[in-house]
Image (spheres, rainbow, N blue to C red):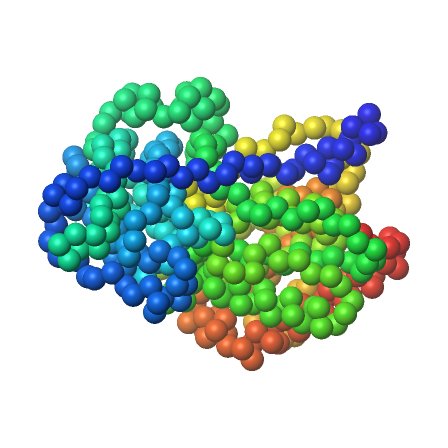
Length: 441
């Protein structure tokens, strides 16, 4: 039983995301079959693009009504694609090669016909994705890529048609049909051709320094919260990279980033990276926002994992963060069956103790240099914090919905102070842990 338990401790939480991005070649009819929607802007010059080797998307629009809706994406060259629907909630996912999106601000935010909104972005190196939130069940009536013709650029075209629930479910792949498996949550969807990140190999090093995993939240197709042109994914990436550089400069620790660019990383992959690398500490960086109707809030907050949220705000935030995979089109919420093995329970208890200890140390350090939330220590059921053997915290460094906090979040001076206080907390944490529990991982 002991061997089995140890095996589960190291493997129980990692959800393998091994499905590769499958791209199907779409048929391309003649230009005469193209959408009758008028002129579009010329395709962007690829040599002027920030990523000249990738196709450029220069425009996107919707047309139609609540019976039939068309989506058109202007490109500078033909691409391959794969489109498929998902249930509960109703969505359509389009997987394409990595694309340099040069679309106007706000593209995809307005509803039209059968589409409530759509979003787009990178989901893995070499692969981009477009996700449509639908008003109800639909079928993909037509999907194709048009050649450039008559002064118009190549175009990706998708036609959606309204259908009833029964027809929609029957159109799904068997493993994706909701009635064939129990629902895990309201956002549960089929795990069908999902994207995956490049998995890091297990650490094999003689370097005995503790390894710290820094996890900038969101990324790629998932912007996180937003205020004007400032997105959470960019703010926390900049903070995470600054924290990495400061930690590495000390020479005391090794550091691994879950992402170091604008790439989407599924939640379970973030946990898997920490566990496969035998991390001694996992720090997830985020920036919250409150809807206007819920008033204002400010300051940094530090979260640890708990089955029961410490308050309603913590519960709201955890629910929002846990939907990151659904935002990217494929929900990966399936968790391994829980095992009541005593050794696993003991490991989780020890991990929670260390997580709470680090959270308190981090609060003590940060409150001397940056503004903290009125209730700076909270807990909730964040999926990204659920590694049973890696002490983990999630730090909301501020509220992008608060003017003062946003000014801090974009300030290099503020970031340097916040990063400095976090590094000091890390030093104190490992000094005490080494003194009381022996060598860290």
